[in-house]
Length: 182
Image (cartoon, rainbow, N blue to C red; front, top):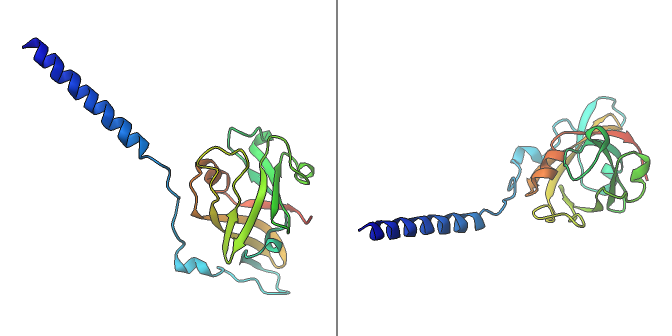
């Protein structure tokens, strides 16, 4: 009788462990969002030429985001001084992240660089070279440029589809504009 109980308990434990393993394999990361609400298709306060007031612009092309932006970079993969890094967007569809404005002029060792494109109002970041899954999949964002008149002030990323928790954290706060151009 004791052998029968021991056998039954052993079978129950094996079934439980097998179930846990099957459920763990199905736990693939899902994108953060599927679509933006229709109300976000338009700028909250449209920018007007020659008018000095706060406004926002939904970026649709590289020229909208060209420049250097300061960002918090909390990922432990990067040793950003004080948790702050800089990203430089070029009009040709490339970007570099670095630990200083100067170090964004070209790819910087230990920091991501890559490509981006726009598909209408969707900003698509090319897969980062060497990024581990799920961060190796190209995310889609809406990018809003907060401006004062014609001058950029900050950039804000709104996830449309994103499966990389570290990137979501790094882009969750507005990035402050610090320098212009190429």
